Structures are given as C-alpha cells and as structure tokens.
Image 1: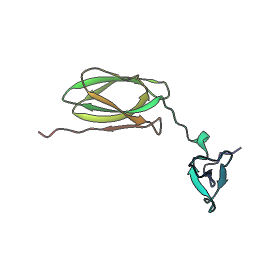
Image 2: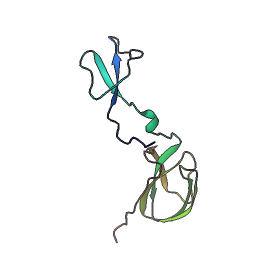
Image 3: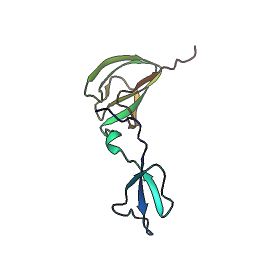
Image 4: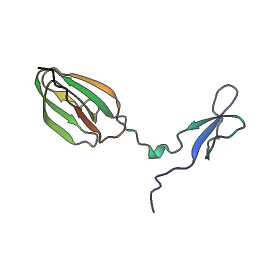
Length: 127
C-alpha cells in the first residue's frame, strides 16, 4: 500500500451562535461550506507528528571554548562537542538533557518542527 503525500481535502468544523464547536460537525471538503459559521482545522493530525519532549535550543558562546552534551530527539547521546567562540548555534534535543562546560547562554526556543534539524551559525568578532 502506498503512502498518500498530498492531502486534497481540508477539515472544517461548524460553530454555533455562542462560539462553541457543534459536536459531530467535522467534515472533509476541498472548500469551506458557505452556509453557517465554519473554521478550518487540521484534518490529518496523525500525519503531523509533534514531539513535545523535543525542544529547539539556542546557544551563544563568548570568547571561550566549551564542550556540549545532549540527547538528540531520537535518543542518541551527542557529545562531547567542542565549540569555539564567539559563535551562535541552534540544535534540537530532548527536553532537559543539555549540559555544557563554561558559561554560554543556552535558551529554549520552542518545539522542534523536524527532529533531525541541526543548524550552526558562527559569528567572528572583528580584529
């Protein structure tokens, strides 16, 4: 059986006069119905994975060298990764698994859209 990559139908739910969703009103159509108060909702949630334990982090390093350890979203242990500053980097990791030496600024940006994303941007100070 093949995988359907292109979903042609959109999901819509109907709202009553008090702004509540009408029970059982979810329909799948190409276009929104014209009669009534309708709103589009994600129709294929099973196909849009969201791992709330996978978080995107940002790390900013000053004029120092640090070591970084973390557990990737697929539970692979990463590290030690040597990073030389000044630099800035973003990466996805399991929530609360990031450990670093030194004193870089590590902030949680939000949920990872793609758990395999790793981006590194290096900024060098002028001489």
